[in-house]
Image (cartoon, rainbow, N blue to C red):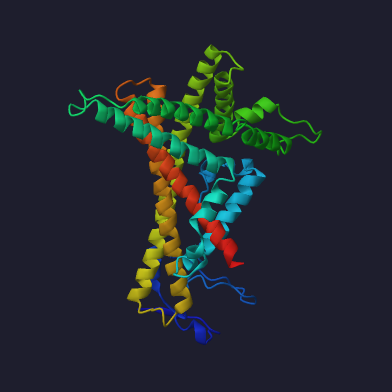
Length: 377
């Protein structure tokens, strides 16, 4: 087997000084690659068995790389993404017993989660659909042949009435929590309009309508959905007529349905990228093991590969959780969009509770990671 020997290899470069030419079969480098002639400055060895690792950032955050919505990210979104990237860097160490992650208390996580409107919305949704499930089970048991002819206690009817009122109250509260949710996409579109790269030398800009029409579809859907949701909520509060509120709610359901489909497509693309990176790391580890490279002979590279694989597997896990949550949302909203009647209450209660549990678990894990990172400083 032919090999290439590189000069000036120090004692720590023993494992990469001689590289098998069969590495090209793993798709790392083109077979026609030739090293640059200028070697006066330091250059990375392109045929090294440990090329530079992929950066520890999310390949696609919320699907922004599909539609190019990174230019529409608000300051809060950018800060949240940077926090998630920092958390990913220390996730592997946090999993060890006695680490900062294991010392984080549940009460502290819930306290931080409930500080945000999004966290309160998830918590209220969890309570709301738990009550709905209880009512469904109660009605199913009460209508069963075993208990059908028995007399029910008087406090039971009052309890059912109170639970129904509480469910409606939680629903209206959650609608109020997401009021003015159209402001983030609006400010993002306006910011893009003000920094129009196609403006003429005279300072003239294209019409604002042009910027709206050429904004990424997820941004437009979020904007229209926010306006429709607000109109439906104002109708519930009595500020807008009932007929207008029903039309706005119908439009909001269609926007939710369309955005859920878009998010599912983005989720599939994101997972395919993660799986491809995971396959590359696994192939590299396999090639190293077949070449006799162990953790003792090259501990730094082997450890980096193992950490990268663990990080990608964890990211793939939460991508699958997000996909399942989106499927539950799709089932829920399909009943309203297509006006399905068969088992509507039961299916929407189960789908709503599952969606609430999955989204709350993801948000809980994010806050726990942030708290564990803050405890390390």
